[in-house]
Image 1 (tube, one colour):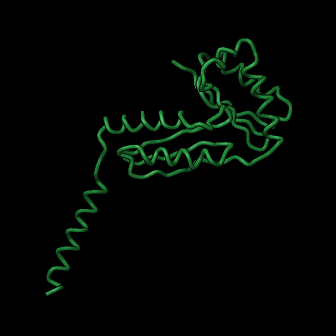
Image 2: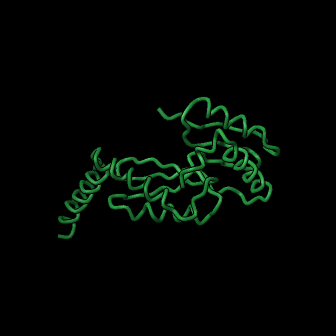
Image 3: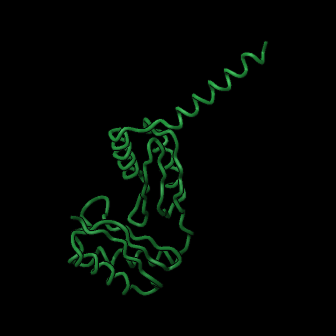
Length: 176
């Protein structure tokens, strides 16, 4: 008698899992989750100009990416995103950059060279700086958004001129 009920339960369980896996998020739900994830990430207390956080929303799943200088920031980002209503899974792929006094000195020099240069000081005004300076083992990656191609090129030139910089990857986007 137990076998007679076992088969329908297995079939029912399989159908339930299949329908759960196929559950699609509406465009409105995805837009809401994106907005809330962005808000929660920029509100993190230890986020600095030397951290780069990015994310991707796929239905109800969120993938966190980027690089941070503070290991606590990686776990904090994952924790705040998990609490967002509708988020079912968080894949935290944020890289924690290695601690290095040499890289720390390079970060300070890059910050002063970029944000201290009069034509670029307009980017230093917001609380969240639009130009992110990521340094890993002397290699520099610039992320964020600037107003023009001229500003993008100027930031890249300024960064390449800082002593101790091995390479500069300029991923700055130009606002439309």
